[in-house]
Image 1 (cartoon, one colour):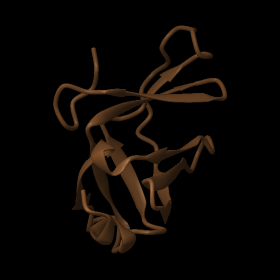
Image 2 (cartoon, helix red, strand yellow):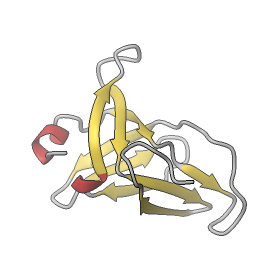
Image 3 (tube, helix red, strand yellow):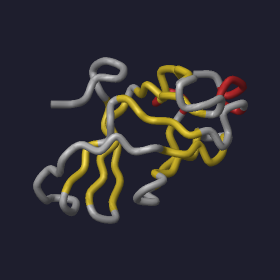
Image 4 (tube, helix red, strand yellow):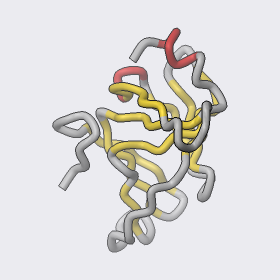
Length: 108
């Protein structure tokens, strides 16, 4: 997605697709799915800074990590979805990213 388009979305609240996978620690068992809100903190030269509003986990997504934005008018003007080309994983205080085979589809 283009940087100029994303700049308009700063401070928006999004849900990500695929939903982040959660684990009990970095190497622990998988936890139930939670469709958290993520805040687009800022659009930087290297990518888009996002932060989970519930857990405070944050990362910078490269522009090639973001496939597209979809609005969520039922929630309000500054709400939407980010469909990603990557899968975000959260375990304990760690956050890591892996590429997916198709945009928005979770890894097995």
